[in-house]
Every structure is written in C-alpha cells, then in structure tokens.
Amino acid sequence: MDSRSLPADWPFRSAGRRLRAGSVDWWVIDTGGPGPVILLLHGLGASGHSFARMIPGLAAQFRVIVPDLPGQGCSRSLSSARSGPVAMAEDVSRLCATLGVEPAVVVGHSAGAVVALQLAQGWPRARVVGINAALGEFDGAAGVLFPVLAKGLAALPFAATGFARLWGRASTVDRLLDGTGSRIDAAGRAQYLRLVQDPVHVQGALAMMAQWDLRPVLARLPDLPNPVLLIGASGDRAVPANLSRDWAARMPQARYLELPGGHLVHEETADGLASLITDWIVEGSA
Image 1 (tube, one colour):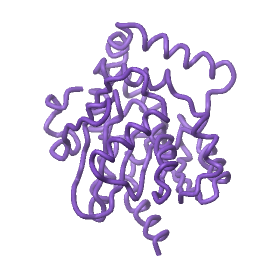
Image 2 (image 1 turned 60 degrees about the horizontal axis):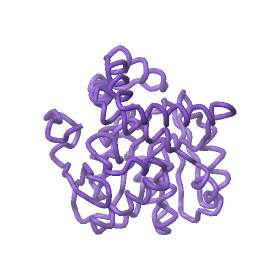
Image 3 (image 1 turned 30 degrees about the vertical axis):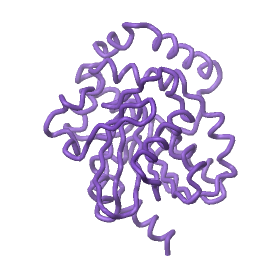
C-alpha cells in the first residue's frame, strides 16, 4: 500500500513515517518519548495496524516502534530474496540501527515472533514476547509442497493481482479471519480487507511464505539466554498453543502462558495484552 493513501482513521497513521534503511523503504509507527524502546513485529499478511489496541498501553512507559515488515503493509523491499526469518531479522536490526535504538523488549505475533526470537540472538539484553508464535514446520509432504507452491506463485507476474481480486472481498476476508479462531471488530476486518485488496501486499506475503525456513532459528532456541514469554491462545486454529508450550520448555529462560482466544488474541483483548506484557517486564526487572 501507499502510505499517502491510507485512510485518515488508519491506526496510528499520524505517528507513522517513511524511512530508508538498507534495501527496505520502511513505514514505521514511532510513538517517540524518552522511555526504553519496545519493538512490535506483526505476523504474515498483517501490518503494524494489528497492534492498534496494544500501542496505547505500552506508550505510557515505552517508546513504541512498529514497522510494517518488508513487502507488507506500506513497507517496500528492494530485494526479492530477503523475506525469510533470518534476512528479515537482519533488515529489522538495520532499521533499529538507523533509528539509533536497541530495543529493550521485542514483541512478535505469529511469524513476527520468529523474527523476534532471531533478533534476540544479536540483542542478548532484550526480553522477548511471542504471541501465538509460529514455531512449527509444515508436516510431511506439505513441508515440501507448500513452499514450492508459494515460490511458484510468487514468481508469476500476475499471481498477486489474481489473489487480491479473488480474496479481496469482505465475505472471503471474514471467512479467513474466522478461520483463525478470533472474532475481531468491524474496523479490524476492514483493515485486513484493505490489505488483502493490495496486490503488492499479497506479493510480499507470498514471498514470505516461499522463503520461510525455520530451521536456522529453531536450532538456536535451546541455547537462547534471553528472558522469553510465549503466549498461546487455547482457541487458536492457525497455530496450536502446544507449540508455544513445548518450545517454552526447551528454552532456558522461557515462560509459557495460555489465554482464551484465537490466533489474533491481541486484537480481541481490550488493551491488546499491553497490561499483561508490562506486568511481565516489570516482574522481570524487580
């Protein structure tokens, strides 16, 4: 999407700005302020808008930075080969260096949680929160076929336009969202509809699917020294909660917490889980 065409009521539009760092033309929400920095990373196919409920509660104590990930939302990647978790983490790290910050806390949702955990490898003092972290590989033949299919679709010049037309209907987006186990409000559904109707955003999501390789990230998690909170939602139909529970047990400084709700639990909760996250940070700092 073009940030200049965002509707006036797009979440935190007035706090957003464009910034070039490395091979990415970023769209970044930045609340400013003197507090420690907390970085929020959205999941596949979303944008920074998904943290709309969380940002106000965190901004009372933190400088909150929320980029649209490369190729999605209003961020544009100049490279077609940097949509995997390791490359994405490198690009986000470069963004933070350009901003002159090293986040004290990184919060990631779904695929964004994978990027957050990879970033922690280079930020040993950072605390990490993963919300319905997408820490599972596809099983069996799907593990081979899905990435190959995504690569093929990403390479087709008109595939993204076709998908945007096919999926970019309110009824289709409603079904996709309901399939996550979450019930989000009409404004949130309209925001996802706008994203899905944008072929460039869809192309970015396809590229992310095609290049997604968890193996280098997962291999290092058992040795990750950072404090980690993994939150699973009992009604998540997209990423089973047991993935977060099982991985929390394998990391030396990780804790697991299960909540009611679906995959977009942070969009269902009144404060976007801000108070829960803040309490965990304060508890760990005591």
